[in-house]
Length: 218
Image 1 (cartoon, helix red, strand yellow):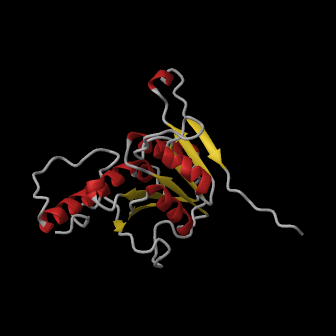
Image 2 (cartoon, one colour):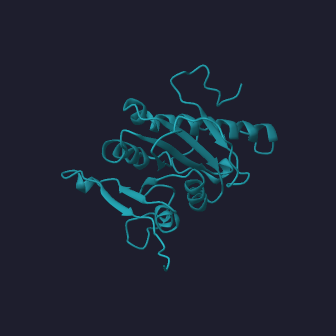
Image 3 (cartoon, helix red, strand yellow):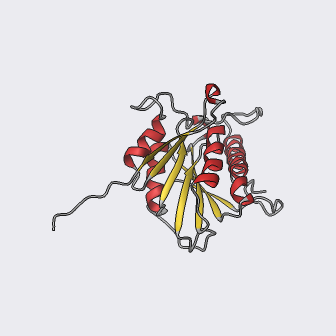
């Protein structure tokens, strides 16, 4: 049985995981986001901070005529690990191709389920959305490529998570969000999850990078 077949689970949206062929290749199909005035991307790594970024977008950024693309870049192999923790431990025989494929399938199904959970605030608010999952070994570059390929009007993401081991030049952004701020072709909104010490004020720190527009001489 295909682990991503949601026919028995009508509450889950249709999710397609795109394996890394060419990031510039696209197919033309009708989607829930077609016809929207703006397509807003929310880049997620399936962490708590990503869930917070989705909720923040629903409450503060998304307009009535917008549609949302939840964008997730999954590692090309489960051996690379995942930012939001490993799958429940299941004995495997790493030398067997069948067991490796089973692990990959379980990983994909778990990713799809977590992404569907993140989308619940969008569904509850009646906002049209789709979940877009791609696989690549370079999360930072692939995020920027997908943002451009999908024609997003803006992208929202958490400041940490994404497996970042170091902070960006401003001391607050993770390496992935810092890279996207400097390389994405559209405005980037970075939402920092309030720290425990901020519970009293509980206000997120929001950094906005507007798209650069080159001026041409008349």
